[in-house]
Image 1 (cartoon, helix red, strand yellow):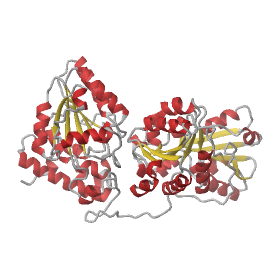
Image 2 (spheres, one colour):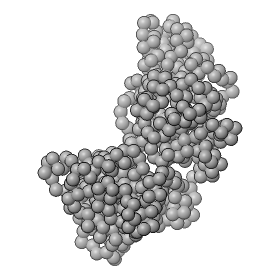
Image 3 (cartoon, helix red, strand yellow):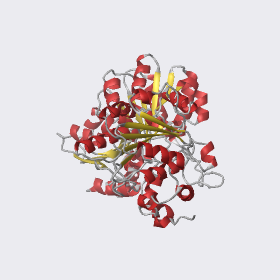
Image 4 (cartoon, helix red, strand yellow):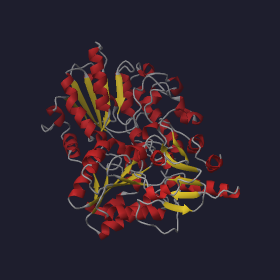
Length: 580
Protein backbone atom coordinates (compact mmCIF):
# COMPACT_ATOMS: atom_id res chain seq x y z
CA UNK A 1 0.00 0.00 0.00
CA UNK A 2 1.30 3.45 -0.86
CA UNK A 3 0.80 5.95 1.94
CA UNK A 4 -0.22 9.50 1.11
CA UNK A 5 2.02 11.26 3.58
CA UNK A 6 0.43 14.63 2.94
CA UNK A 7 -2.74 13.29 4.56
CA UNK A 8 -0.95 12.60 7.85
CA UNK A 9 -2.43 15.35 9.99
CA UNK A 10 -2.43 13.65 13.40
CA UNK A 11 -1.83 10.24 15.01
CA UNK A 12 -5.53 9.50 14.51
CA UNK A 13 -4.73 9.03 10.82
CA UNK A 14 -2.70 5.87 11.51
CA UNK A 15 -4.97 4.22 14.08
CA UNK A 16 -6.90 2.19 11.47
CA UNK A 17 -3.83 0.76 9.72
CA UNK A 18 -2.83 -2.90 9.96
CA UNK A 19 0.71 -4.15 10.62
CA UNK A 20 1.68 -4.30 6.94
CA UNK A 21 0.37 -0.80 6.35
CA UNK A 22 2.24 0.47 9.41
CA UNK A 23 5.38 -1.23 8.11
CA UNK A 24 4.93 0.47 4.74
CA UNK A 25 4.37 3.76 6.50
CA UNK A 26 7.59 3.34 8.50
CA UNK A 27 9.55 2.70 5.32
CA UNK A 28 8.06 5.81 3.73
CA UNK A 29 8.87 7.92 6.79
CA UNK A 30 12.44 6.64 6.87
CA UNK A 31 12.87 7.47 3.18
CA UNK A 32 11.58 11.00 3.75
CA UNK A 33 13.87 11.36 6.75
CA UNK A 34 16.88 10.29 4.72
CA UNK A 35 16.06 12.75 1.96
CA UNK A 36 15.78 15.67 4.38
CA UNK A 37 18.74 14.71 6.56
CA UNK A 38 21.07 14.26 3.59
CA UNK A 39 20.07 17.65 2.18
CA UNK A 40 19.66 19.63 5.40
CA UNK A 41 21.69 17.85 8.05
CA UNK A 42 20.55 17.05 11.57
CA UNK A 43 20.51 14.22 14.09
CA UNK A 44 20.80 11.27 11.74
CA UNK A 45 21.39 8.15 13.83
CA UNK A 46 19.00 8.92 16.71
CA UNK A 47 16.03 9.49 14.40
CA UNK A 48 16.62 6.63 11.97
CA UNK A 49 16.82 4.24 14.89
CA UNK A 50 13.39 5.05 16.36
CA UNK A 51 11.16 5.22 13.31
CA UNK A 52 9.25 2.05 14.20
CA UNK A 53 9.20 2.85 17.91
CA UNK A 54 7.68 6.28 17.23
CA UNK A 55 5.04 4.87 14.88
CA UNK A 56 4.14 2.23 17.48
CA UNK A 57 4.08 4.85 20.22
CA UNK A 58 1.51 6.96 18.40
CA UNK A 59 -0.42 3.89 17.24
CA UNK A 60 -0.93 2.61 20.79
CA UNK A 61 -1.06 5.77 22.89
CA UNK A 62 -3.42 8.69 22.44
CA UNK A 63 -1.39 11.87 22.41
CA UNK A 64 -1.83 14.66 23.23
CA UNK A 65 -4.19 13.30 25.91
CA UNK A 66 -1.52 10.76 26.80
CA UNK A 67 1.65 12.68 27.65
CA UNK A 68 4.83 11.81 25.75
CA UNK A 69 8.15 13.26 26.92
CA UNK A 70 11.22 12.72 24.72
CA UNK A 71 14.62 12.84 26.39
CA UNK A 72 16.97 15.34 24.70
CA UNK A 73 14.23 15.28 22.01
CA UNK A 74 16.76 15.08 19.20
CA UNK A 75 15.01 11.82 18.19
CA UNK A 76 11.58 13.44 17.72
CA UNK A 77 11.59 13.98 13.94
CA UNK A 78 9.16 11.13 13.21
CA UNK A 79 7.01 12.28 16.12
CA UNK A 80 6.77 15.65 14.39
CA UNK A 81 5.92 14.00 11.09
CA UNK A 82 3.01 12.16 12.72
CA UNK A 83 1.67 15.18 14.57
CA UNK A 84 0.77 17.60 11.81
CA UNK A 85 4.21 18.78 10.66
CA UNK A 86 4.83 16.41 7.76
CA UNK A 87 5.15 19.28 5.25
CA UNK A 88 8.32 20.41 7.03
CA UNK A 89 9.88 17.10 6.00
CA UNK A 90 8.37 16.82 2.51
CA UNK A 91 8.94 20.34 1.20
CA UNK A 92 12.56 21.61 1.15
CA UNK A 93 11.26 25.17 1.30
CA UNK A 94 9.73 24.35 4.68
CA UNK A 95 12.61 22.34 6.18
CA UNK A 96 13.39 25.11 8.65
CA UNK A 97 9.78 25.53 9.77
CA UNK A 98 10.44 23.06 12.59
CA UNK A 99 13.24 22.91 15.12
CA UNK A 100 15.42 19.87 15.72
CA UNK A 101 13.86 19.34 19.15
CA UNK A 102 10.39 19.18 20.66
CA UNK A 103 8.87 22.64 20.69
CA UNK A 104 5.55 23.61 22.34
CA UNK A 105 5.50 26.71 20.12
CA UNK A 106 5.00 24.37 17.15
CA UNK A 107 2.47 21.93 18.51
CA UNK A 108 0.53 20.89 21.61
CA UNK A 109 1.93 17.38 21.03
CA UNK A 110 5.30 18.76 22.20
CA UNK A 111 5.30 19.32 25.94
CA UNK A 112 8.72 20.85 26.60
CA UNK A 113 11.56 22.76 24.94
CA UNK A 114 14.41 20.38 25.70
CA UNK A 115 17.80 19.75 24.17
CA UNK A 116 19.84 18.59 27.16
CA UNK A 117 20.02 15.03 28.35
CA UNK A 118 18.54 12.99 31.20
CA UNK A 119 15.51 15.19 31.93
CA UNK A 120 12.58 13.16 30.58
CA UNK A 121 11.86 10.91 33.57
CA UNK A 122 11.93 13.84 35.99
CA UNK A 123 9.67 15.93 33.76
CA UNK A 124 7.31 13.01 33.31
CA UNK A 125 7.07 12.29 37.05
CA UNK A 126 5.95 15.88 37.53
CA UNK A 127 3.29 15.40 34.86
CA UNK A 128 2.17 12.17 36.51
CA UNK A 129 1.91 13.78 39.92
CA UNK A 130 -0.08 16.68 38.46
CA UNK A 131 -2.40 14.18 36.74
CA UNK A 132 -2.98 12.26 39.96
CA UNK A 133 -3.68 15.40 41.99
CA UNK A 134 -6.24 16.48 39.40
CA UNK A 135 -7.89 13.09 39.05
CA UNK A 136 -6.73 12.41 35.49
CA UNK A 137 -6.40 8.98 33.89
CA UNK A 138 -4.05 9.59 30.95
CA UNK A 139 -0.83 7.67 30.41
CA UNK A 140 2.48 9.41 31.05
CA UNK A 141 5.41 8.12 28.99
CA UNK A 142 9.11 9.05 29.19
CA UNK A 143 11.08 8.02 26.10
CA UNK A 144 14.77 7.92 26.99
CA UNK A 145 17.94 6.58 25.38
CA UNK A 146 20.48 4.37 27.10
CA UNK A 147 23.09 7.16 27.07
CA UNK A 148 20.70 9.59 28.76
CA UNK A 149 19.80 7.00 31.36
CA UNK A 150 23.35 7.20 32.77
CA UNK A 151 22.94 10.88 33.66
CA UNK A 152 22.52 11.77 37.32
CA UNK A 153 19.10 13.38 36.96
CA UNK A 154 17.76 10.35 35.07
CA UNK A 155 19.03 7.96 37.74
CA UNK A 156 17.53 10.09 40.50
CA UNK A 157 14.18 10.16 38.71
CA UNK A 158 14.33 6.45 37.89
CA UNK A 159 14.64 5.81 41.62
CA UNK A 160 11.78 8.15 42.51
CA UNK A 161 9.11 7.39 39.89
CA UNK A 162 7.83 4.02 41.21
CA UNK A 163 7.15 5.69 44.56
CA UNK A 164 4.25 7.51 42.87
CA UNK A 165 2.38 4.19 42.91
CA UNK A 166 0.53 5.07 39.75
CA UNK A 167 0.61 4.87 35.95
CA UNK A 168 4.11 5.72 34.76
CA UNK A 169 5.82 4.28 31.69
CA UNK A 170 9.51 4.52 30.76
CA UNK A 171 10.56 3.41 27.29
CA UNK A 172 14.29 2.77 27.32
CA UNK A 173 15.69 2.99 23.80
CA UNK A 174 18.87 0.92 24.02
CA UNK A 175 21.05 1.31 20.92
CA UNK A 176 24.32 0.70 22.76
CA UNK A 177 25.61 4.17 21.98
CA UNK A 178 25.93 7.62 23.43
CA UNK A 179 27.14 10.33 21.06
CA UNK A 180 30.32 8.32 21.18
CA UNK A 181 30.54 4.97 22.98
CA UNK A 182 28.76 4.52 26.31
CA UNK A 183 30.73 4.64 29.56
CA UNK A 184 29.77 3.26 32.95
CA UNK A 185 28.96 -0.07 34.56
CA UNK A 186 25.24 0.45 33.85
CA UNK A 187 25.89 -0.43 30.22
CA UNK A 188 27.39 -3.80 31.09
CA UNK A 189 24.16 -4.42 32.98
CA UNK A 190 22.06 -3.49 29.94
CA UNK A 191 24.20 -5.87 27.88
CA UNK A 192 23.48 -8.65 30.39
CA UNK A 193 19.75 -7.99 30.03
CA UNK A 194 20.00 -8.03 26.24
CA UNK A 195 22.02 -11.24 26.19
CA UNK A 196 19.52 -12.97 28.46
CA UNK A 197 16.56 -11.72 26.42
CA UNK A 198 15.49 -9.75 29.47
CA UNK A 199 15.41 -12.76 31.79
CA UNK A 200 18.52 -12.14 33.91
CA UNK A 201 17.65 -12.19 37.62
CA UNK A 202 20.14 -9.36 38.00
CA UNK A 203 17.73 -6.58 37.01
CA UNK A 204 18.11 -3.07 38.37
CA UNK A 205 14.72 -1.99 37.06
CA UNK A 206 12.86 -4.74 38.88
CA UNK A 207 14.88 -3.95 41.99
CA UNK A 208 13.68 -0.36 41.79
CA UNK A 209 10.04 -1.44 41.57
CA UNK A 210 9.28 -1.42 37.85
CA UNK A 211 7.41 -4.01 35.88
CA UNK A 212 10.06 -4.86 33.31
CA UNK A 213 9.32 -5.70 29.67
CA UNK A 214 12.07 -6.50 27.18
CA UNK A 215 11.72 -6.17 23.39
CA UNK A 216 14.57 -7.95 21.62
CA UNK A 217 13.58 -6.63 18.19
CA UNK A 218 13.21 -2.95 18.94
CA UNK A 219 12.74 -2.08 15.28
CA UNK A 220 9.93 -4.60 14.79
CA UNK A 221 6.52 -2.95 14.83
CA UNK A 222 4.53 -5.96 15.96
CA UNK A 223 6.80 -6.58 18.96
CA UNK A 224 6.73 -2.91 19.91
CA UNK A 225 2.96 -2.59 19.65
CA UNK A 226 2.47 -5.70 21.78
CA UNK A 227 4.78 -4.34 24.49
CA UNK A 228 3.29 -0.84 24.46
CA UNK A 229 -0.25 -2.21 24.67
CA UNK A 230 0.66 -4.35 27.65
CA UNK A 231 1.86 -1.23 29.51
CA UNK A 232 -0.92 1.14 28.48
CA UNK A 233 -3.21 2.15 31.34
CA UNK A 234 -1.11 0.24 33.91
CA UNK A 235 -1.65 1.37 37.49
CA UNK A 236 2.04 1.11 38.37
CA UNK A 237 5.50 1.92 36.99
CA UNK A 238 6.52 0.00 33.87
CA UNK A 239 9.86 0.08 32.06
CA UNK A 240 9.96 -1.20 28.48
CA UNK A 241 13.51 -1.95 27.35
CA UNK A 242 13.73 -1.90 23.53
CA UNK A 243 16.86 -3.03 21.67
CA UNK A 244 17.22 -0.80 18.58
CA UNK A 245 19.72 -0.07 15.81
CA UNK A 246 21.07 3.47 15.78
CA UNK A 247 21.14 4.80 12.22
CA UNK A 248 18.96 1.97 10.89
CA UNK A 249 18.36 2.11 7.16
CA UNK A 250 21.50 4.07 6.29
CA UNK A 251 24.50 1.69 6.09
CA UNK A 252 27.12 4.36 6.72
CA UNK A 253 25.20 5.52 9.81
CA UNK A 254 24.85 1.96 11.07
CA UNK A 255 28.61 1.47 10.70
CA UNK A 256 29.86 4.90 11.76
CA UNK A 257 27.47 5.62 14.59
CA UNK A 258 29.53 8.37 16.22
CA UNK A 259 30.08 10.28 12.99
CA UNK A 260 26.39 10.13 12.09
CA UNK A 261 24.96 10.99 15.49
CA UNK A 262 24.71 14.52 14.11
CA UNK A 263 25.84 15.31 10.59
CA UNK A 264 25.74 18.15 8.12
CA UNK A 265 24.42 17.60 4.57
CA UNK A 266 25.86 14.41 3.05
CA UNK A 267 25.73 12.27 -0.07
CA UNK A 268 23.01 9.69 0.45
CA UNK A 269 24.84 6.94 -1.40
CA UNK A 270 28.36 7.30 -0.01
CA UNK A 271 27.74 9.17 3.24
CA UNK A 272 30.44 11.68 2.28
CA UNK A 273 29.86 15.25 3.50
CA UNK A 274 28.61 17.64 0.84
CA UNK A 275 30.92 20.40 2.07
CA UNK A 276 34.39 19.61 3.36
CA UNK A 277 35.75 22.30 5.65
CA UNK A 278 39.51 21.95 5.93
CA UNK A 279 40.07 25.37 7.48
CA UNK A 280 41.85 25.79 10.78
CA UNK A 281 39.78 24.94 13.80
CA UNK A 282 40.27 25.82 17.47
CA UNK A 283 38.97 22.43 18.61
CA UNK A 284 41.48 20.57 16.47
CA UNK A 285 44.22 22.89 17.70
CA UNK A 286 43.24 22.21 21.32
CA UNK A 287 43.17 18.44 20.85
CA UNK A 288 46.54 18.25 19.12
CA UNK A 289 48.09 20.36 21.86
CA UNK A 290 46.53 18.26 24.62
CA UNK A 291 47.94 15.09 23.06
CA UNK A 292 51.40 16.67 23.31
CA UNK A 293 50.84 17.75 26.91
CA UNK A 294 49.58 14.31 27.90
CA UNK A 295 52.49 12.59 26.18
CA UNK A 296 54.96 14.82 28.02
CA UNK A 297 53.29 14.57 31.44
CA UNK A 298 51.42 11.48 32.64
CA UNK A 299 49.62 13.57 35.24
CA UNK A 300 47.78 15.59 32.58
CA UNK A 301 44.30 14.19 32.00
CA UNK A 302 41.69 15.31 29.46
CA UNK A 303 38.07 14.76 30.44
CA UNK A 304 34.75 14.85 28.60
CA UNK A 305 31.14 14.31 29.59
CA UNK A 306 30.08 12.30 26.57
CA UNK A 307 30.97 14.81 23.84
CA UNK A 308 34.58 14.09 22.78
CA UNK A 309 33.91 15.01 19.15
CA UNK A 310 32.81 18.50 20.14
CA UNK A 311 36.43 19.42 20.76
CA UNK A 312 38.24 17.21 18.31
CA UNK A 313 38.89 13.98 20.21
CA UNK A 314 38.15 11.44 17.49
CA UNK A 315 38.25 7.71 18.30
CA UNK A 316 41.80 7.57 16.91
CA UNK A 317 42.95 10.42 19.15
CA UNK A 318 41.24 8.91 22.17
CA UNK A 319 43.16 5.71 21.53
CA UNK A 320 46.44 7.63 21.42
CA UNK A 321 45.60 9.36 24.71
CA UNK A 322 44.77 6.02 26.36
CA UNK A 323 44.09 6.14 30.08
CA UNK A 324 44.78 9.87 30.18
CA UNK A 325 41.51 10.50 28.34
CA UNK A 326 38.45 10.05 30.54
CA UNK A 327 34.85 10.00 29.30
CA UNK A 328 32.37 9.78 32.17
CA UNK A 329 29.30 9.67 29.92
CA UNK A 330 26.81 12.51 29.60
CA UNK A 331 27.24 13.57 33.23
CA UNK A 332 28.67 17.08 33.54
CA UNK A 333 28.13 17.23 37.30
CA UNK A 334 30.11 14.06 37.83
CA UNK A 335 32.84 15.12 35.40
CA UNK A 336 33.32 18.46 37.15
CA UNK A 337 33.62 16.77 40.54
CA UNK A 338 35.96 14.13 39.10
CA UNK A 339 38.14 16.99 37.83
CA UNK A 340 38.17 18.42 41.36
CA UNK A 341 39.24 15.05 42.74
CA UNK A 342 41.97 14.67 40.15
CA UNK A 343 43.31 18.12 40.99
CA UNK A 344 43.27 17.34 44.69
CA UNK A 345 45.10 14.09 43.95
CA UNK A 346 47.94 15.89 42.20
CA UNK A 347 46.91 15.47 38.57
CA UNK A 348 46.30 18.22 36.04
CA UNK A 349 42.71 17.74 34.81
CA UNK A 350 41.42 19.57 31.71
CA UNK A 351 37.69 19.22 31.13
CA UNK A 352 36.64 20.06 27.56
CA UNK A 353 32.98 21.02 27.60
CA UNK A 354 30.47 22.98 25.56
CA UNK A 355 29.24 26.20 27.15
CA UNK A 356 25.62 25.10 26.99
CA UNK A 357 26.39 21.93 28.96
CA UNK A 358 28.69 23.30 31.67
CA UNK A 359 25.71 25.20 33.07
CA UNK A 360 24.38 21.80 34.18
CA UNK A 361 27.29 21.63 36.63
CA UNK A 362 27.05 25.08 38.20
CA UNK A 363 26.90 23.76 41.75
CA UNK A 364 29.94 21.53 41.25
CA UNK A 365 31.89 24.46 39.79
CA UNK A 366 30.99 26.59 42.78
CA UNK A 367 30.91 24.07 45.61
CA UNK A 368 33.38 21.33 44.70
CA UNK A 369 35.90 23.25 42.62
CA UNK A 370 35.84 26.94 43.58
CA UNK A 371 35.26 26.73 47.33
CA UNK A 372 38.18 24.30 47.52
CA UNK A 373 40.18 26.50 45.11
CA UNK A 374 41.36 23.46 43.18
CA UNK A 375 43.46 24.01 40.04
CA UNK A 376 41.17 22.18 37.64
CA UNK A 377 41.00 23.53 34.09
CA UNK A 378 37.79 23.88 32.07
CA UNK A 379 37.97 24.66 28.36
CA UNK A 380 34.67 26.10 27.24
CA UNK A 381 33.57 25.50 23.62
CA UNK A 382 30.76 27.09 21.57
CA UNK A 383 30.49 30.10 23.86
CA UNK A 384 28.83 33.32 22.76
CA UNK A 385 26.54 34.06 19.84
CA UNK A 386 29.54 33.48 17.58
CA UNK A 387 30.19 30.05 19.09
CA UNK A 388 28.27 28.15 16.43
CA UNK A 389 25.17 26.86 18.23
CA UNK A 390 21.94 28.78 17.74
CA UNK A 391 19.16 26.49 19.00
CA UNK A 392 17.33 27.85 22.04
CA UNK A 393 18.28 24.77 24.05
CA UNK A 394 21.98 25.06 23.21
CA UNK A 395 22.78 28.74 23.65
CA UNK A 396 26.34 29.46 24.73
CA UNK A 397 26.22 33.17 25.54
CA UNK A 398 25.39 32.88 29.24
CA UNK A 399 28.82 31.49 30.16
CA UNK A 400 30.65 34.70 31.04
CA UNK A 401 27.97 35.93 33.44
CA UNK A 402 27.41 32.49 34.91
CA UNK A 403 31.00 31.44 35.60
CA UNK A 404 33.04 34.64 35.92
CA UNK A 405 31.15 35.68 39.07
CA UNK A 406 32.03 32.55 41.04
CA UNK A 407 34.79 33.40 43.57
CA UNK A 408 38.26 31.92 42.96
CA UNK A 409 37.56 30.99 39.33
CA UNK A 410 39.71 32.77 36.76
CA UNK A 411 37.76 33.17 33.53
CA UNK A 412 40.00 33.77 30.51
CA UNK A 413 39.00 34.85 27.00
CA UNK A 414 41.79 34.57 24.40
CA UNK A 415 41.70 36.68 21.25
CA UNK A 416 44.04 34.60 19.07
CA UNK A 417 45.25 31.06 18.53
CA UNK A 418 48.61 31.85 20.10
CA UNK A 419 46.98 33.37 23.17
CA UNK A 420 44.60 30.40 23.40
CA UNK A 421 47.37 27.79 23.54
CA UNK A 422 49.39 29.97 25.89
CA UNK A 423 46.41 30.18 28.27
CA UNK A 424 45.90 26.41 28.12
CA UNK A 425 49.57 25.83 29.01
CA UNK A 426 49.52 28.45 31.76
CA UNK A 427 46.31 27.04 33.25
CA UNK A 428 47.72 23.50 33.33
CA UNK A 429 51.03 24.58 34.83
CA UNK A 430 49.68 26.88 37.57
CA UNK A 431 48.38 25.38 40.82
CA UNK A 432 46.72 28.36 42.50
CA UNK A 433 43.18 28.55 41.09
CA UNK A 434 40.57 26.85 38.94
CA UNK A 435 40.64 28.28 35.43
CA UNK A 436 37.98 28.45 32.72
CA UNK A 437 39.16 29.26 29.18
CA UNK A 438 36.62 30.35 26.60
CA UNK A 439 37.50 28.95 23.18
CA UNK A 440 37.01 31.70 20.57
CA UNK A 441 34.18 31.29 18.08
CA UNK A 442 34.35 31.87 14.36
CA UNK A 443 37.47 31.76 12.20
CA UNK A 444 40.87 31.15 13.76
CA UNK A 445 42.73 34.40 14.37
CA UNK A 446 46.53 34.52 14.52
CA UNK A 447 48.66 37.18 16.17
CA UNK A 448 52.40 37.82 16.40
CA UNK A 449 52.01 39.97 19.51
CA UNK A 450 54.19 38.89 22.46
CA UNK A 451 52.10 37.25 25.17
CA UNK A 452 52.43 38.36 28.78
CA UNK A 453 51.36 35.34 30.83
CA UNK A 454 50.27 37.52 33.71
CA UNK A 455 46.70 37.21 32.53
CA UNK A 456 45.41 39.41 35.34
CA UNK A 457 46.71 42.35 33.28
CA UNK A 458 44.87 43.78 30.29
CA UNK A 459 46.72 43.82 26.99
CA UNK A 460 46.75 47.28 25.40
CA UNK A 461 46.73 46.33 21.71
CA UNK A 462 46.65 49.88 20.33
CA UNK A 463 47.54 53.09 22.16
CA UNK A 464 45.30 56.10 21.68
CA UNK A 465 43.48 58.76 23.61
CA UNK A 466 40.05 60.14 24.37
CA UNK A 467 38.18 56.90 23.56
CA UNK A 468 38.96 53.34 24.70
CA UNK A 469 37.41 50.12 23.42
CA UNK A 470 37.80 47.10 25.71
CA UNK A 471 36.79 44.02 23.71
CA UNK A 472 36.90 40.47 25.01
CA UNK A 473 38.26 37.58 22.95
CA UNK A 474 36.20 37.10 19.83
CA UNK A 475 35.05 40.74 19.91
CA UNK A 476 38.60 42.09 19.54
CA UNK A 477 38.68 41.86 15.71
CA UNK A 478 35.43 43.86 15.61
CA UNK A 479 36.97 46.49 17.89
CA UNK A 480 40.07 46.74 15.70
CA UNK A 481 37.92 47.31 12.62
CA UNK A 482 35.99 49.98 14.49
CA UNK A 483 39.33 51.60 15.40
CA UNK A 484 40.29 51.77 11.72
CA UNK A 485 37.01 53.54 10.94
CA UNK A 486 37.66 56.01 13.76
CA UNK A 487 41.22 56.70 12.67
CA UNK A 488 39.95 57.63 9.22
CA UNK A 489 37.77 60.22 10.95
CA UNK A 490 40.58 61.65 13.04
CA UNK A 491 40.01 59.74 16.28
CA UNK A 492 42.67 57.32 17.53
CA UNK A 493 41.15 55.04 20.17
CA UNK A 494 42.91 52.86 22.68
CA UNK A 495 42.02 49.23 21.99
CA UNK A 496 42.33 46.78 24.87
CA UNK A 497 42.11 42.98 25.07
CA UNK A 498 41.05 42.33 28.70
CA UNK A 499 41.92 38.59 28.60
CA UNK A 500 40.58 37.94 32.13
CA UNK A 501 36.85 38.55 32.57
CA UNK A 502 36.44 37.51 36.19
CA UNK A 503 38.12 40.61 37.60
CA UNK A 504 39.27 44.02 36.43
CA UNK A 505 42.77 45.35 35.89
CA UNK A 506 42.50 48.36 38.20
CA UNK A 507 45.81 49.85 37.05
CA UNK A 508 44.73 49.84 33.41
CA UNK A 509 41.27 51.18 34.18
CA UNK A 510 42.74 53.95 36.34
CA UNK A 511 44.66 55.11 33.29
CA UNK A 512 41.35 55.55 31.44
CA UNK A 513 39.63 57.75 33.99
CA UNK A 514 40.46 60.86 32.01
CA UNK A 515 39.01 59.48 28.79
CA UNK A 516 35.86 60.90 27.32
CA UNK A 517 34.36 57.47 26.63
CA UNK A 518 35.08 53.82 27.42
CA UNK A 519 33.24 51.14 25.44
CA UNK A 520 33.17 47.50 26.50
CA UNK A 521 32.30 44.73 24.05
CA UNK A 522 31.42 41.15 24.89
CA UNK A 523 29.84 38.21 23.08
CA UNK A 524 27.68 37.38 26.07
CA UNK A 525 24.78 38.83 28.01
CA UNK A 526 25.29 42.26 29.52
CA UNK A 527 23.69 41.39 32.87
CA UNK A 528 26.51 40.07 35.02
CA UNK A 529 29.03 40.36 32.22
CA UNK A 530 32.53 41.78 32.36
CA UNK A 531 31.40 45.16 31.01
CA UNK A 532 29.36 45.81 34.13
CA UNK A 533 32.47 45.17 36.23
CA UNK A 534 34.31 47.82 34.23
CA UNK A 535 31.39 50.25 34.51
CA UNK A 536 31.17 49.74 38.27
CA UNK A 537 34.89 50.36 38.71
CA UNK A 538 34.75 53.57 36.66
CA UNK A 539 31.51 54.69 38.27
CA UNK A 540 33.06 57.59 40.22
CA UNK A 541 35.07 58.86 37.24
CA UNK A 542 33.79 61.49 34.78
CA UNK A 543 34.32 58.96 32.00
CA UNK A 544 31.20 57.84 30.09
CA UNK A 545 31.04 54.02 29.96
CA UNK A 546 28.98 52.25 27.31
CA UNK A 547 28.58 48.47 27.70
CA UNK A 548 27.81 46.53 24.54
CA UNK A 549 26.71 42.92 24.63
CA UNK A 550 23.68 40.70 24.25
CA UNK A 551 20.31 41.02 25.90
CA UNK A 552 19.21 38.53 28.54
CA UNK A 553 16.85 36.49 26.41
CA UNK A 554 16.39 33.09 24.83
CA UNK A 555 16.96 33.26 21.09
CA UNK A 556 16.19 30.41 18.72
CA UNK A 557 17.99 29.54 15.46
CA UNK A 558 19.18 33.09 15.13
CA UNK A 559 21.30 34.72 12.46
CA UNK A 560 24.57 35.72 14.14
CA UNK A 561 25.11 38.81 12.00
CA UNK A 562 21.59 40.05 12.74
CA UNK A 563 22.02 39.53 16.49
CA UNK A 564 25.33 41.40 16.52
CA UNK A 565 23.81 44.26 14.56
CA UNK A 566 20.73 44.40 16.82
CA UNK A 567 23.06 44.80 19.80
CA UNK A 568 25.33 47.45 18.22
CA UNK A 569 28.26 45.08 17.90
CA UNK A 570 29.31 45.80 14.30
CA UNK A 571 32.45 47.89 13.60
CA UNK A 572 30.41 50.71 12.08
CA UNK A 573 28.05 50.89 15.08
CA UNK A 574 30.88 50.81 17.60
CA UNK A 575 32.65 53.62 15.74
CA UNK A 576 29.45 55.65 15.70
CA UNK A 577 28.98 55.19 19.45
CA UNK A 578 32.60 56.16 20.06
CA UNK A 579 32.09 59.44 18.20
CA UNK A 580 28.74 60.26 19.81
